[in-house]
Image (tube, rainbow, N blue to C red; front, side, top):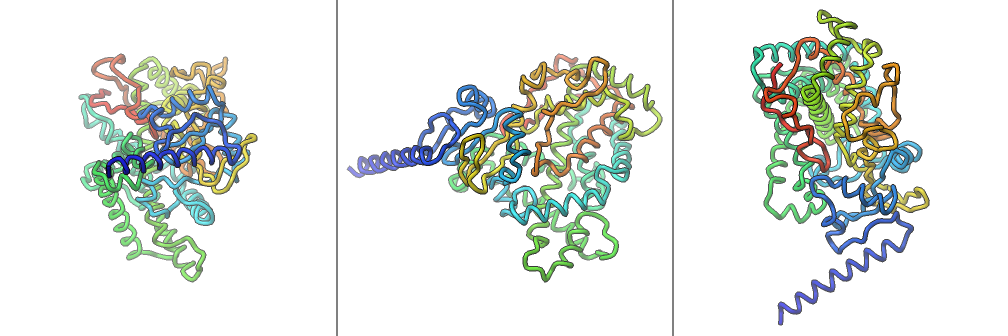
Length: 489
């Protein structure tokens, strides 16, 4: 009898939740979408490894603005260039909010640049953009740092003596050292075991966030806290990175010269001292640690993954690699460093690197936005508290803007005369007020590192071009290129 009473109670709760969902749909003019089940919402309908594919199918039925439920969380997906641009750019003040992603909230406690909103976000973003530019982001000084780091990378690959090697950690070390120069004021040896450990954790964190288990944590965080799983180990490992960051901050505090800042940490500490009596200041320790984590993570794994994917592409399409090398040799040669100003004279190379980013589609769902208030959009109301997904996959691979969206084709960025041409739908770094703060740095790294590599090496797979699989390892939050255990140069 007790079991029967419990079953009835559970059934009543499910019915009440279902009715509540229906009531919420009817209260406001929500964007259309598929019917949702109590508690789980539309989760059972989604492709767990590539949810964006399911959302695209929904868009075929309901249009470019679709409402779905990931568990109890209401989500509005924006499909196609027009809808994404209209939201992030034309209505940027409405859509700038960042969603409280549970995994990131657990790590940062809501502090830092990436997860914040309002005045905290405004202060930290302006400071970060200004400081990174002061230290050379997008300028000659940064160009020199990247050129110097390129020499270390070339030396490491030379050390393989043409035997097969795994490029993964080479790329991670190289790209990470650039952001380390900006943030920590130093680079690390490729043999530094502690440095390699941190890079491994960063890679694991991104892979976890892109995995079905990571997405499950973000949908049911309270439940997952009570269940065993990889997420507990992941949080423990992230604490190692936070501990390293705190150590670096303490070293900077011990040697700080208020009149001569060396890097981002120094600039932040100086601003902390200047505003220590300002009760509304966001320049305090709680914001410093997670902001450094944001910069370190975003400045390492995404760019290194893009360069690694570029190598995969060049090995799969050796004629593309050969044509790039011919162009580079004719413009730069093999005896001087490349400069960003060379890019305008390398249209095919530039087109290939743009196509790499488009085809890779590194964040197919886009980084989640959040409705900080009720938003009127295209005749609908997106209620406060709704997660908003500006689906970059639908922009970077939309048939309206790309002749062959699912094929690798540098011609997407070349006119009939072989000159580079822009495409408004090329927004791998997103758009609007929340566009990636490190976009100019990432563009510079991708160009200078790849050109330097092709000046010095030709890359191939021991198993041949057909062995290269460009399918990503995960396709939920982030598209991560498959690891290659053997690369020859």
